[in-house]
Length: 333
Image (cartoon, rainbow, N blue to C red; front, side, top):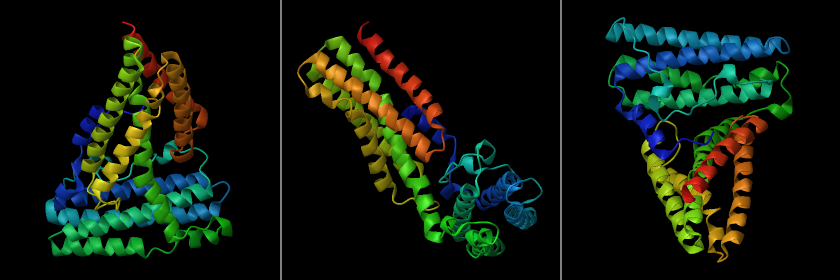
């Protein structure tokens, strides 16, 4: 399954609301649902560790209870300020949050895996409460959000807790390690998605032009135009998706340039062979490069996106082959 095209992605983004436009009531509702989600995630971790690491599982049960307490305090403040009805607003409804794989879909939850995920969650929650407090105008709400931010920041190191409960010294995670993990999720992965998008989405126009004209120069121009066009579209989409204030992802222009450039590179890889004058030589070389690109994308999904390699390879191969075949069929029509 290849990445969503830019129009589909833009439609999805329009269905969510920027964090900067949330009202104080909506921020509290979002915080309430987020604390509930986190508590469920910690309980999933505890359940996964219970048999092999019962003491460490207890740590996550305690953390889930802390999240429930946060939710209680947030709910109490919300009802006092805005009444009994609390709209269901989730992180997925707001731009600026990293999309994590749900805990119930994560297989083979090792102690190291859940520890890293929990460290990132705490860092994300701290940033969220700090940004939310800065935007709050109500003194009571502002104080509560700042208190929760400090509690997230001042949590005893999870690595330190788990070290006492069967965690090897080599598996310790310092604060800077959590920062690196968050950087990977928020900055590196969007760039990789751009590379995937460019590699797959440009196959159809390139090979349609190749088999329609049998002219390497004209094919090169079409492939270059498709790659640069996709890069510009992806760059604007990424830059407009998040101002970076909540997630700390950096300046939108820098992210947009990175995503756009990676998308263009993904398409130019199999376009450059058409600088060769001989049509069949250029086409065979382009096809070989496509196979290398699809293998690389499968490896990236396996390495950084927790997708089993064979499944990733099958999804990418099928999606890429369909796009590739569509280009050839259209070109020969």
